[in-house]
Length: 326
Image 1 (cartoon, helix red, strand yellow):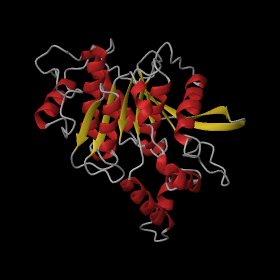
Image 2 (image 1 turned 90 degrees about the horizontal axis):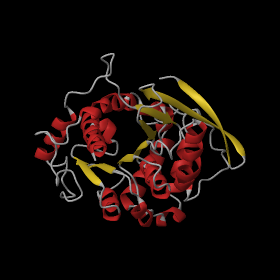
Image 3 (image 1 turned 60 degrees about the vertical axis):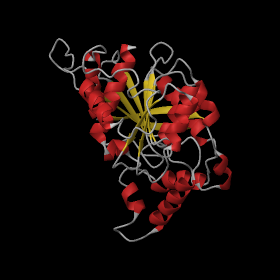
Image 4 (image 1 turned 30 degrees about the vertical axis):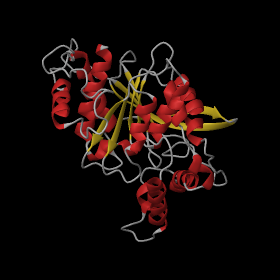
């Protein structure tokens, strides 16, 4: 992965954005844009984006009519929303469908998808948040409706002509949902892991605990030292996120009414042991956008792409293939 930088002008000031391309280098390949969590960055994704983009090459071989293909009512809006890992039998059938022999290009290589990974302002090696600047409850709307379109345009991605897919985790999932709701026709599909659509007590409690961990000076427990490996300014990343989430003004934050405007395919994933949110989050998405498909994973916390990486890859591959098959 080769890290590059893009210079943007946001709110009248120059802003440097760290980004990298992964997967298929062909600009004509399907594109997946990765949006990180509230304490994340480009580097914190590690190799997951590349693994997923490579696996998605198999989507071109998906046979929607084959004996292994999922039938209507499985992993669909009319499935039980509490299906856990899509239900044992359902999950196995979708995994089997996802593992069909992939189509190869003329060179014999798996074509794969192209991936764009970036760090939002305040994170990673992107321009840090000024210490005096406090994010407002609309900070995710700002990222979804100002930064993301500006970055895609600067990188030459014509979302009206060739809409990308979005893959968002936690706050990044919320940003993906907001973007899709307000930019119809410019998102081909999306996968959201542990997204937030409103504020829950469990979220606030865990974020308060994260504050104590960040302030702990014990080398074995110090969150700041761990974040410093991925952020040029860990205080910028942590306090921007932590302060706004714990502010009284943010308790009323709720994007639920906006979700009914989403028209693209949506796969919403949540771990059954998520310490930052309950299943009410992804089920709330499906209530507003009934075409949303749910994946509720056992033995999984707030980071499904880490706790259940292969299950997520298999599910996304099957979901994207099904979307491509219509």
